[in-house]
Length: 356
Image (cartoon, rainbow, N blue to C red; front, side):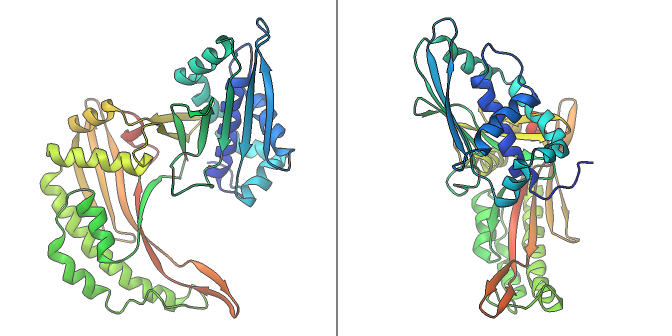
């Protein structure tokens, strides 16, 4: 089990991956990237107040230099964690998984070699900045070469970080957007039942703690979610292996993971290894060839799970889960808590999504 750290592991992983990608372009002659390379380029940036560093790397044969800029933007806790080099031994598993990705990525290696050999000055920008534009892009590590995005940009996930999309809100319109508009499921028959379950729910209610009053308010959300999730599951069972549903499912997963940006791939770091999915035509055809099944759990967080079988492989594909939260906000009279529901689309570490 990974050591508990005082930072989000996904945020820390973004810094490591950016440094490893930077090292791939900067290390000449080309050799496998190591922990030491990651630390070298991390420290180059972390010693700068701007958290950005630019430097030149040379082709020793032609003397042509390329310019590389590496920058990091992290939440406060992750930045403090990674700045203390003694903490890095606590995330050695992330180092190993990150190195597995960059050293095994033929496209990245090929591009680095091309830039080394093209006998002209190139401008390479690597940015670990997944927190800067969360609504505009799914990319956590961006790679720009001579002003153009490199294929592929990286959307990074770590073990335990299964979510890749969400639909926020408890109202009926959110349920329609998730289940009917996105997946073509028929849940219309439970609209009145769903809304009745929410009649006593007050989204504007504020509480002084996450105690009984907060939990009682969440009961209304949970009861409503059980209704819509049950209807969606029943509708899904009737069409789970239809070609049209599988097409909608593939589109739903791709949009959730990439916002339909063809330059993004999702990369999962777990267990010292790296898995990825780039959502090309092979992804579409593979989803069509899968034998799918669906199950529903309404204990705790209502969850719809899609499992898949493909030749000699079987296992989970994705799940859709209702999550209930009590976020806090500071006011002039002290901290207050509200209630909220999110519908999370998740792919577990063992998902076939990363294997097809």
